[in-house]
Length: 235
Ligand code: AMP
Image 1 (cartoon, rainbow, N blue to C red):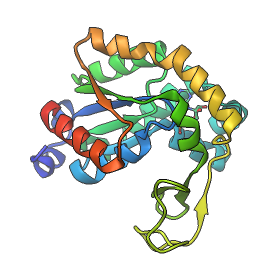
Image 2: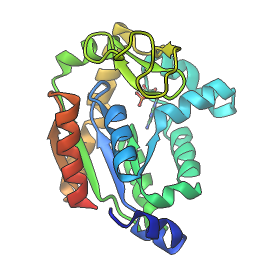
Image 3: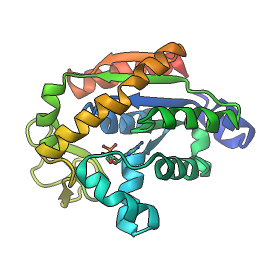
């Protein structure tokens, strides 16, 4: 990972060497927060299919129109839409730096599609990292969370308030937003879907020898440190 600049300059051959990391875990496990940390620390590109879908909804694209109601209900958007969005995003030049997938894959079909996509450029998943948490704590974690509308920095009513009330620590922005699907009832639905569709991927990556597990119930900084050590080892 120390070789970031060289790798960026060597495109397109260097694509084959670019790390691909996956963060697995239920909603509220901290995938977004930790992916942002990895982006800052290692220069990896955070690819959140949730963010890409929310952007598509906002832009009113065909995919966004098809996804909107499904997302509001806490269900999974169809594999074909999500795979197409991910494939397009991964073709953008910045991904040569390596990517950290946050919220993808979420089904066995998506996991196999990712393998096929990476095989086209001789890539592999370097590590699928499962953020291990207690479900019971996730509803409280999610229902209190909000982000800076300007830069996306994450905050929480109980666990992480900005140092100066109402002002983002990172960019000084003063507008904040909460996700429409972070209501308690929708969170329950999302957790159910996670266990039915996504949790089996832990075994999928374990069988391939690319699974790592991290205890993600502690403080954000401790989890970040454990994750950073793991990423250094795996890339
Ligand atoms: P997230 O921001 O990852 O929590 O995703 C928010 C919502 O977007 C999910 O509840 C799903 O409705 C949808 N979504 C995000 N990623 C995927 C995916 N890989 N497959 C299907 N639906 C997804």
